[in-house]
Amino acid sequence: MSKLSNVWVFSDTYSRLAEVISGGLELGENVKAIVLTEDESKEAFAYGANEVFLIENSDSNNIVENYSKSIAKVIMNEGKSLILMPGTKRCKSLASLLSIELEAGLVTEVSEINIENNNINCRHMVYGGLANGLETITSEASIAVIASGTFENIQKDESKTGEAQKVDFVENKNSIKCIEKTSKEGSSVDLNKAKSIVAIGRGISKQEDISLAEELCKVMDAELGCSRPIAEGEKWMEHERYIGISSVMAKPEIYVAIGISGQIQHMVGAKDSQTIIAINKDKNAPIFDYADYGIVGDLYTVLPAVTKALKG
Image (cartoon, rainbow, N blue to C red; front, side, top):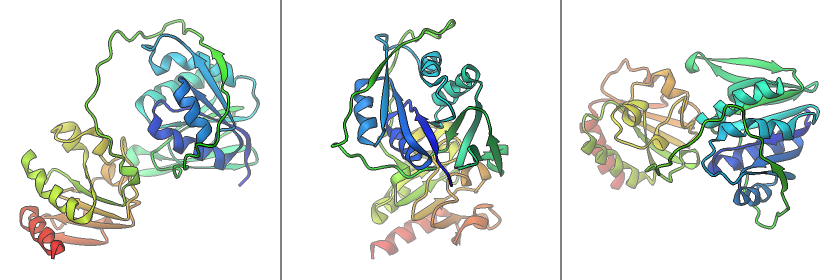
């Protein structure tokens, strides 16, 4: 696989900066990071970016999409380039605006990228994860919005430093103004780094019963995850713990699915686990088509027994 001369990276969140820079180093000779704060600038250099461009803007209430013209101005006329972004909601919105500004081809939900004959080939999920498509971007500037876990996070090296190039902010003609920000209660968990995950689904009938899965997590030294209905329907757990096509794409060594039916939207986020163990009372549940090991039974009976057995 050949490399591009320039790969640009941008992330609206610290937690994904290491991954997009890692991807940039794999695909390009020169990685150029675009950041919005001095702290991000230091992080980008520490992760290995060759150049960093800091967009100066004193208005902290600007939303990410308002930086589309500023970013486009930095990248414009730089020759054949690839722009990498993580698959967050904000970055997806920003990518659509950038594709117009730069007349760039754009592919989202990307899980694999390779460069051939100076063209960018992107494998990405289509039809809600039911299939993979292969797209070739031939435009001068190309944008790939990557799914979580597409590239391995690069390790930070604090000895790598540099001075960011300051870039003036360019106001959008029709900017969206943020009137107020309220802190969101979230979790610091990163399931992308977990070696073992215990995930719960609709089979858990009451929120207090999540403690059964938490006990198994303690025994296995595992992180607790869930399917979409638990996080977004019942709101029993944080979005950061939801595994599926529009959230975490986990790749643990062991994945224990408890009371999860195994619909494709969930399994897209779990199918790359090294070993999948399923517990479900429905012997015809789709999860068993993916599982390396399966237990057909009521989780309220099976789970305490498994936890007890592992405790010895």
